[in-house]
Amino acid sequence: MLDFVRPSHLGLLALTHWLRDARTLASPSIVIILVGNKKDLDAEREVTFLKASRFAQENDMLFLETSAMTGENIEETFFKCAWSILAKIESVDLDPERMGSGIQYGDAALRRFQRQQAKTEKKVCDC
Figure 1: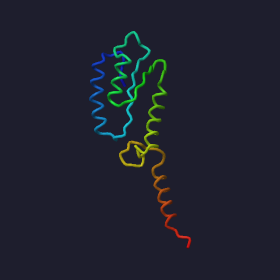
Figure 2: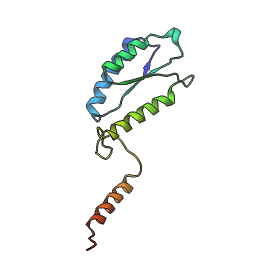
Figure 3: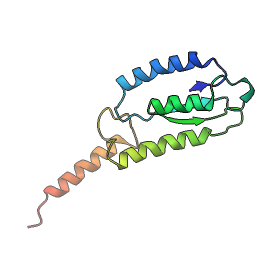
Figure 4: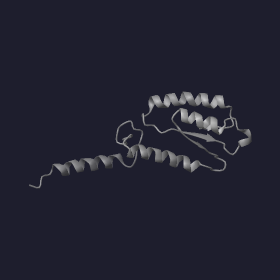
């Protein structure tokens, strides 16, 4: 998250280091959204929309401006992230079953049981 009312060089510098670490340690298919907060404080703004948007684009991130005070774009941020992950799953860029994918959903034990059941049913011959 980028605080729009802090001096831009401090936030962007810290974000650059964080991005390097995240991309080194996380799945190659990681979805990262740059969230510019305090959109409601335009008069005190240190980071312009253009600068933040350009930084996000240059670093292969999604970008949204939000306001925790007004609630603007808070839900949209989570929806955008979820839709991006779903699109990667559907395009097979991201396999949620692969260890280290960073995705956990539902009951893993139940999914393993269902896969085992499907394998067992295939082995049964109705000769």
